[in-house]
Length: 397
Image (cartoon, rainbow, N blue to C red; front, side, top):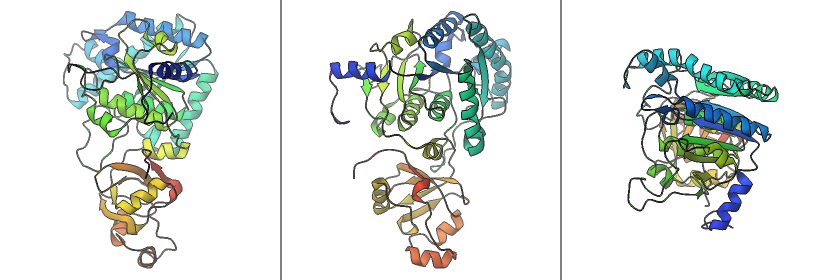
């Protein structure tokens, strides 16, 4: 069956059985809207999740938890209202709340004979290649020792999740909410399944409040239309759109995702049993580990716009990016930076590591390779080598 063909009910059941029940390494992201009720921590719900995690362990699965809620817990303890609060206040709330959040997870898991291990991460842990690889090794050793990593962004020193995203067209922030963090973790540890728990039943054909909106059971591919139709923020810093983007990152890393309502009883048990709850997003063609890092692990502050010919060549999978295919250079970058590749319609299609800086790129803009090599005084004028380019989607040309 092709990816574009609609799935019948029996096909959907078979897919869930094969993809979800067979998952051995699972990342569970629990959102603020799930862990709180009326602005206060829902203790019973957190303990129920711990019970479900223990059940997954008994089934022989490895589990990692990405947990939101530190800022909300800190605000509650400091006697602050729901906000919004200035950046410094939110960092202070995170400093107070993170310890409380970890203590709650540790207590809940230790009651069941499971050791919890705290990991507080920042953008630099992903953007720096060495730290990125060290993270994988650390998580692997924790899982081998039988511990469950409980992961959150270190909001007391990192402001990516708390600060508004820049409005520059070329800016791409890959680290800024726990949905994306969970997808990056799933990508890094080669997880089989990412479970994104929110207070909505899953992805819908339209806004769930719209009459006739239908829940999507299985999504073969995260399309631009699906991204555009996702809703805005809710209780936390994320929202349905960030979950869709997280599912796309996971899919390109060979990992399936389920977006489901974490306020429903026994939701984790029902998901891994293959019950038709939430929305299953299927994995697609997997990127190599290096290309995952290029595509997803770093923020991007500059872009190059390419013509239709260069776009086709990149999607064909055989070409490097040459100056002749570049129409415009946006922003500043240096040799070795990860830069966005944008087509003429303004859609980001790829990211790649550049071989020279933005000033030189502008000097050779649109020139054929022989002329560009003369101007730059180099043997090869490739702006990006093929093995340093990660395509962000599949496309039939």
